[in-house]
Image 1 (cartoon, rainbow, N blue to C red):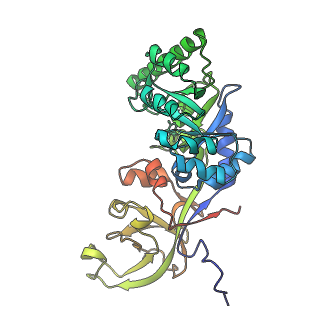
Image 2 (tube, rainbow, N blue to C red):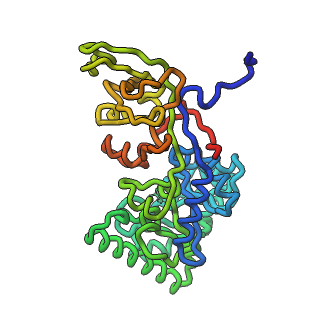
Length: 381
Ligand SMILES: *Cc1c(COP(=O)(O)O)cnc(C)c1O
């Protein structure tokens, strides 16, 4: 008998399995590709790309990673509350009125442009910052050639500039025009860094590579490389880079079979009666749906799940909390079984790259949207 104080098992309905061995392995593989003296900065924004930022960061901290990046203030504070020490860089915008919180939690703020730097400085609180340089992405950053603006930022006496960084926007595109563009971004970046050094402005820790840059560029003369998606063992779009590098997917996604029912030929099922049985059919109802962050289009675009070692097609329209799977070819499937939506089941596996491609997105979006209603547990090997 279960006492009312017990919590539901994370695996009661739909859950993520997080393989921390794979995470450590990936951190090791990526570190080994960096120049001597260059360290991994683990990007754990968006709840660690859906993997659980606190658990991911704690695991990496224990294996020697001492720098982390998040998207916003609340994510940074959550990491500190979870016991994460060392550098926590907020990559996105934080308004100047939050300066006391940046200081209180010893967070390092990216400076989005000169105006942002001036506003943070005017808050009158000493702040640790890294300067973002725009080398061609045209998102955040001071234009890399605007040395006058850089000089003015170094004059702002409340900004403690501990680093200078930029972001590559086409580093995972293998085509020649993209490679040329990446090269021009690198050139602009190092030119600005050299200008700072030559003019008595210490750039501190410099960093420019993200996953694409770590996997495709030669080692860079930087203090950090910011690894996001590659740390989680998947490629942003194709799987080739991640597999070649020997990275292992960290996340598996599973859901319970709620019930199995029979349909006669001609009978239809689900919203809009969008699935119609053409033969005697067994349908399994899975306890996961689009409100859990799965793209609704996955069911219509050939999405599959693994059940008892077989690959079975999703059918009909995905519901908010459930979806239908044709298990006619897997006659032993029954209520309570665990279905695999991402990850390994026996000899078969479904990769996040494959599921993302089916619904016209990238793995970053697919994984980071997996919702909080999904349980999470560590994989026991
Ligand atoms: C999200 C982000 C990263 C991580 O990118 P990945 O491609 O997932 O490695 C690195 N740097 C910045 C500025 C980012 O916004």
